[in-house]
Image (cartoon, rainbow, N blue to C red; front, side, top):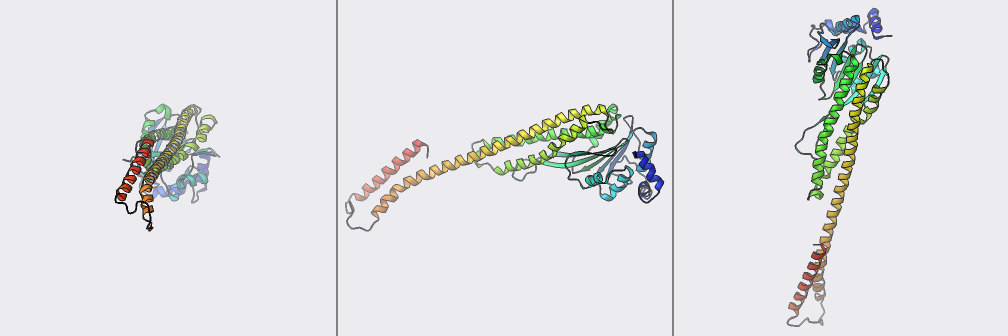
Length: 375
C-alpha cells in the first residue's frame, strides 16, 4: 500500500492511533510556524519543517498533519522535517504519520548505529556518521581529536526526515545552500539525501586534513633530538582517535555504492551520478586514513627504536664508568686485607705509588672509552 493509501486508511479507522492522535496533540497547543528553528506543535525535538514545490520553498502553515495532507493532495513537492535527538514519545506521532518502519524508528531514536542503507517498503533509511575536529592548543595523551555524531535520513516519495544526534552537524547551512539551487532541489527528496551525504563526506576530508597536522607535529617531535624522551601516549591517542574516524568512514562505502549503482525508486536517476562523485571523495578519505594508520605505526616503531638506542647508550656509559671504578676498587680491596707480610706495605713511598697507578689506569681507561664513543 502506498504512503497516501496508508494515510487514508489511518484516517478512516478513526482510532486513537495514526493521524488523529497527532491531530489531537496539535489542537491542544497553539498553532505556530513550523519553519521556526526551535518551536513545533510536536515538541522541541522538531527544529524545522519546510515544504518545497518545484525546488522553491513554500510557507508551512498549520500543523504537521495539514502540511503533509496539502503536499499529498497536490501530488507534487515534498516536506523536509528536521529533528534533533527526539525521544520515543516525540517521534511516535511522526512515525505513524509517515508510516515509518518500527526498526528504523528504533535506530533513529537510540542512535549509535553504523553507517548503513536500508529499504523498508517505499521508504529509504540511511545512517551517516558525522565527524568534527576538536581544536586543541597542544596534543596530549588525553586530548580529544575527533568528535562523532549521527544523522539518520528517512526518504520517501514526498518527504525527507532528518534526525540528528550530537553537538555538531547542523543542517541549517546545508538547507540554505540547497535553496539557492532550485533546479537541484526540484529533483525531489533524493537531492536532499545526496546533499547530506556530500556534506558529511566533505567533513571527513576536512577532519583528515586537520588530523594530518597533528600527525606531522608528532612526527617532528619524535625525530627531534629529544625524540626518545617524547610521550608515546600522544601517538596512542592519535591512533585511538583515528580508529573512531575509521569507524565512521569505512562502513559508508557500501551504502554509497548502492545509491550510485542500484536502481532505487525514491532516488532520481540523475542524482545517482552525483552519488558516484561522493563515493570518490569517500575513497580519498579512506585512503588518507589508511595512510595515517601506517604512518603512525611507523612513527611508533621509530620512537621505540630511539628509546632502545638511548637505553643502549646509557648502558654503555654505565658499563664504562663501572669499569673505571673497578680499578681503584680492586687495588683498595687487595690492600685492605689484614696480612702482615704484603709487598710494599711498609714502604715509605708505597701509598703515593698506589695512588699514581690507580690514577694512570683510570685516565687510560677513560680516554679509551672516549675514543670508542662509550663516554
